[in-house]
Length: 115
Image 1 (cartoon, rainbow, N blue to C red):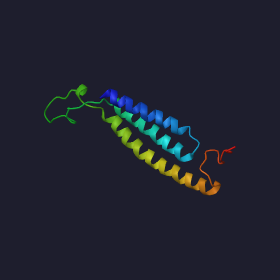
Image 2: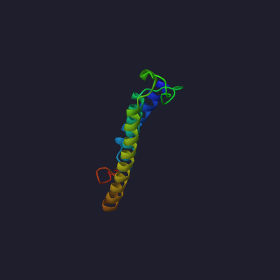
Image 3: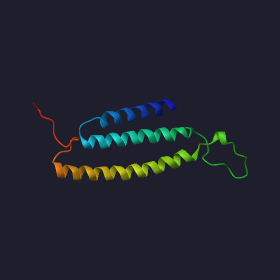
Image 4: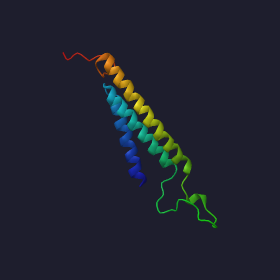
């Protein structure tokens, strides 16, 4: 399972970097989102990936902390998802405003000559 998550993080981060280097603003925004998803998966994976373990300690029993997941990375990822959604929406509004002012969505604000 760890290998699948590691490959998924690598693919998301690699695709995000590739899109981040593209000349169009929308592709840059999608690249930032993919890198954000890769970082969220990485942080989520730091809290341990376990299957078949109860999420809470049963009442009246002594719990072993080594058998349970860490809830802090899960809370951090949930907060990061909300913040990433808000910043992506802000970036899209800025993209639309810049496209309306310049007439292009090129990162430099002007198209490259096709000669």
